[in-house]
Length: 146
Image (tube, rainbow, N blue to C red; front, side, top):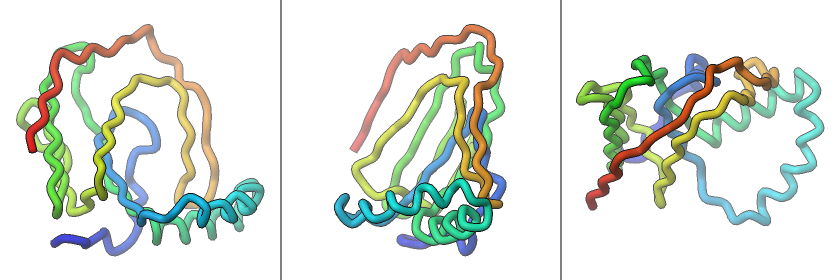
């Protein structure tokens, strides 16, 4: 299973909301990415943006699922990162199991935000601010094992 990625890009990964997700891309030296900056203005043109999105989805693979829990209550979140898979659980219930394990080193992103930006599969760009009540995030404990 190691090295396998989804056969085709998934279009149902949440662009915003509470979700567990992972992505994997090749490790390229930063100077090789500099010419891609020249393509950024093309994102404003829907046909060019759609083509760039399709090309990017062949390089950067992602998987994710929405997490539906009462965020005002305490929960236990578990992430198991293996060479051949990644598993996400909430309160012992599997949310996502995917063969799409990221290359190391692992980065974990946890935040609350009411702003979003999305580059949708149809090539359109979406961004904005969501109305949310006041919120905060408390982390009681992080345990790592190796």
